[in-house]
Image: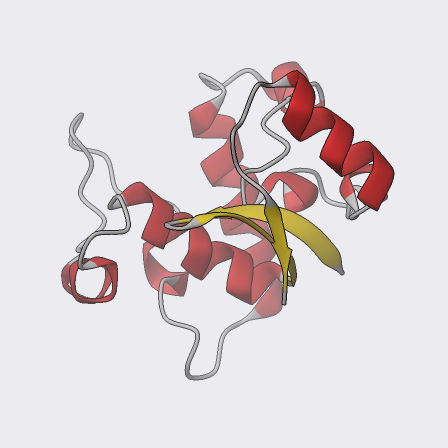
Length: 133
């Protein structure tokens, strides 16, 4: 599915799936600078001592259990929203890589729509053009 995501160079329209969304979330988490190395070395340990739900899915290579990956994204979103399950469906972080996958079903309302997406970027006051790949 096509979606606008944040990258180290701004915003980009790209095809994304759950596997790629997990990797992009990890890259975003480490702040993009020397990100590949940092993600590869990441043990998933968070400041509060808990382990990130996405740590087992940080690599795009290899066999992954789709059901576990889907559950990991939902757990990640639950933690992000302060363990408030109702808040997950109301999440407004539309540029988050895992946003479309935060519920058990894919949220098609966040699919790339050129007019709407450009309008949102302008309303947010972001001085970035959206590049398509």
